[in-house]
Length: 183
Image 1 (cartoon, rainbow, N blue to C red):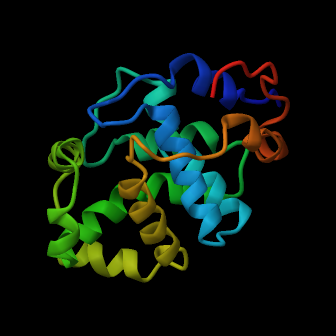
Image 2 (image 1 turned 180 degrees about the vertical axis):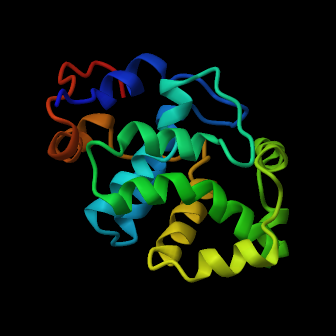
């Protein structure tokens, strides 16, 4: 199976902002750095790095409750990564909906773009959906990823460049663009 050049996507399409204060590339790098600093394992760090990959691969995509960028991103990476990574990417959107249902202070801290996307994604989860998510073995990891996702929007953050993640990406996706002349 041919690989997927994630670094090329981050380099060629990562300058988009999607309503946030940082670019998609900076957001991905910050999220992965937060996960790494928190001692997350490689799978969770990879999910943090790639959670918004669909915004790059499918820039015209629109979120809806049953078909959102988490779902699309998971579909893209599923052939290459362990099931846990794809599940976390898919469920980082659901985790936001969960946290908004159970934690009013979390919901109050959402960026304006996250509030807008929350509406498109179906709003806070209902009781049945909450219970189902809580029962999943990777539930806590999804919440961790979601919190890093919200935190990774600091325009003043300094993190390792994209080149520092190439070896991790190559473990799953094969050869990556290595002539990294940009962050």
